[in-house]
Image (tube, rainbow, N blue to C red; front, side):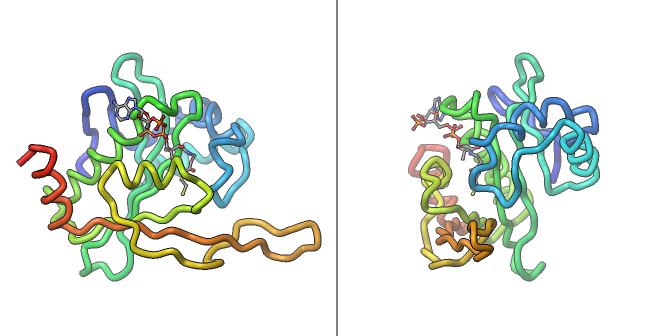
Length: 188
Ligand SMILES: CC(C)(COP(=O)(O)OP(=O)(O)OC[C@H]1O[C@@H](n2cnc3c(N)ncnc32)[C@H](O)[C@@H]1OP(=O)(O)O)[C@@H](O)C(=O)NCCC(=O)NCCS
């Protein structure tokens, strides 16, 4: 992915090991990880995570252009067969920064890049139906809900040691849908 990438308010770039304390700032908050397959982290774990993510091109750090604060991260990786030009997207933003459109702005920039410069055929994302902020974001981005998978994922066990299953919504956008969405917004 050709990074860094600038949007009106944001700078998208690879992680640096020095992002550890800022990563801890939001991954230590229960709201940020409620629907993630991991729990809140300690500062030490966040330092290790930032160093790991600095080596992993799938993770994109999102900073404010104004003051260079880390406000969240995206995840973007090839999905399924490499020849299918399909990418899976994920996101976690700092709960203190929700409601400002940062996730929409950052995800839209990556999606636009995928369809313009990476000849993407399809972008997919999955989320828990009980996470309306997540699927509202996907719908704002123009992705289409294409499946409601029943008891399709599990990140936790109950008090009796039984797996707790939850449903999954699958969203997608195809290249021609992205083009039509842009045209409908007057972006040609
Ligand atoms: C999913 C997540 C990224 C969505 O964050 P968000 O703040 O709701 O999304 P955005 O940044 O796009 O902001 C949209 C909101 O900002 C408002 N907004 C303000 N300025 C805006 C702008 N310039 N552009 C777009 N929206 C704007 C919108 O009206 C919307 O408000 P609403 O929440 O009252 O409807 C966030 O909830 C999150 O990080 N959750 C934890 C991680 C997670 O669950 N990840 C998904 C796992 S499947």
